Amino acid sequence: MSLLKKTRQDRPTADRLSRRHLLAASATSAATLAGATALTGTSPATAAPQPAGRRRRRPGPPGSSGVRLRWLGNNGWEISFGDPDRPTTILIDPWITRFHTGTYTPHGADPATPITVDTGLIDSLRLRADQILVTHGHYDHLPDIPYLAARTGATVLGTETHANLLTALGAPADQLSVVRGGEDLQFDGYTIQVLNSLHSMTGPRRKVPFPGTRPGPPPPRPQVISDLVEGGTLAYLITIADRLSILDNGGANYDARQLAGLAPDVLLVQPGGASVPDYVPRLLDVLDHPPYVIPTHWDDFDHPLTEPARDWGGLTALETAVRQASPSARFVRLDHLQSFTP
View 1: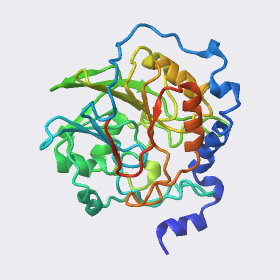
View 2: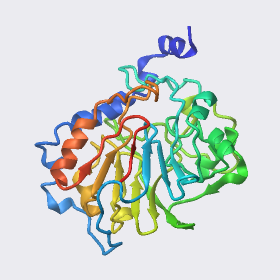
View 3: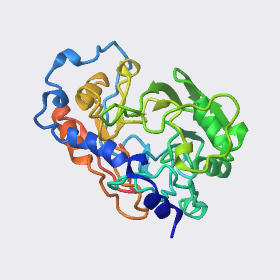
């Protein structure tokens, strides 16, 4: 009997974090999007102000940007552009291993689930990276990054907590760059803007799952998923010259004041957001209605990346909300390891 099965039998259900209860509750609420005033944005008083910001270029036909986005499951993304033989590559939250947690089962994820890394599976994808961007420190975002950083030599951006957790997991310390939100970083032909964001606050008391920070020196090596705390949530705006800009919020929540005026061409958006007033329409309004909206973090990650993605329950409601709030946007649903070039 595996440790995971044993702890599920021995541990009371109430002790387990049920992301299905948390996120599926969001999805259930979000499923009423088609007729609910709070989610279709028919109350303009809640819309965030729109200060003047970056002028969006007129997007060409799909494929014209030369920027490829490949979905690595969950909130994992590979963004590549430039020299076809040696493209510049940015990874966001690459979690390839997807060890079994039971997150979307009725019992939810057991906090005592051991952290494992499948190096053979990671190697099979032959990932490259110049930068790896961490949105937050939870178990479905962080565990594979130390191995990938060491393998690729990439610079890893994240908060002090993220850097401490990564160091404790064995990441090369000299490759970690601590950011706080507010940084606008220039690289060769592209920029990465770091923004303060917010994690989903779910359940009847509106709580962040596995909250907390790890400031100061690195903690002992994390062993189980509850050791990987949120540690602050970041959003990233990646702008490739004048060709394309891509925004990932990092969670099914956001700070509209941080996003005002950004006008990205591509929005990576998560289902859920039931605790956020007018979650989808207000987000699209403040971002000046991006021409491309791509769902992220919608798959049940207990199933391997090598299998087709399985919706945990929020995808249809998200698509409905996007189509109602922004009919001209192109909603692009990708499957595991599938690519799209805007």
